[in-house]
Figure 1 (spheres, rainbow, N blue to C red):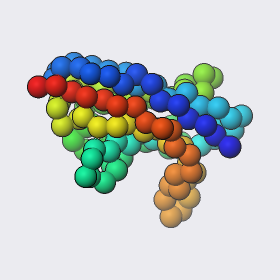
Figure 2: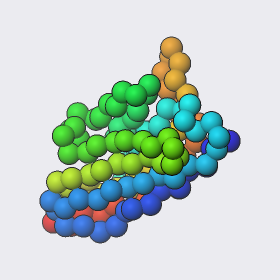
Figure 3: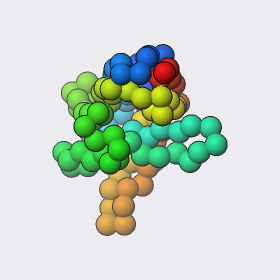
Length: 119
């Protein structure tokens, strides 16, 4: 099993930056696909970015502002967020899963960290 714990959220002004971290436990963590998601009240959870086989993909509106990375030696995943906007306000979750021919199955989730961007 894999356990995930997010940190780094908080309150920032528009245009500011935050770096989220996701600490993972488990010997096989490096073999999993990893991703970041976010969710606001009354809206469905949406994917922010994911890393599969060394390749990183982002949601189109976020590309250029957000950067995802992972450090397998430290069992940690990061999300660098720059030029933040009020609409980025959400609870951010990290997740781990497995890839297959039919897509990614997300199997493990963190508890989430709140990001609030003021005008």
